[in-house]
Image 1 (cartoon, helix red, strand yellow):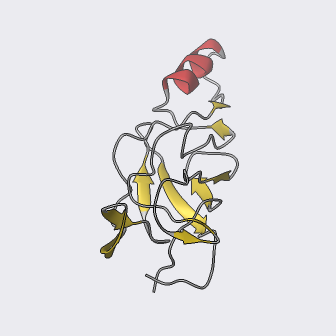
Image 2 (cartoon, rainbow, N blue to C red):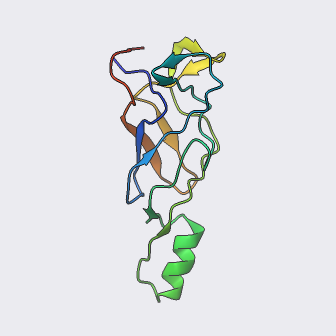
Length: 127
């Protein structure tokens, strides 16, 4: 059974070199020691912070750096490009009139990466 995700959850990207954390603004009406997240907590650089260096060849910055290095794959700083909400969530649990974010949810990046939740940010509340 998946866990409810809160602010401070640890995220990982398939093309990122480092983990990141989820930022949830304290506007949602549910707190579990930290603000609880919903599926629309997906805004780049607000909710989803960078993952260190990006190695995706779909990222224009990586493409440009690789071309400048004469074809040698060259990672560049990761700036997440998420445009859609988290996939799945918990449709039976609403937070701020949107499905709660569950620990098995995925978020797709426009640069071909898949962002997943490594640590939910809390342990005791299941959704």
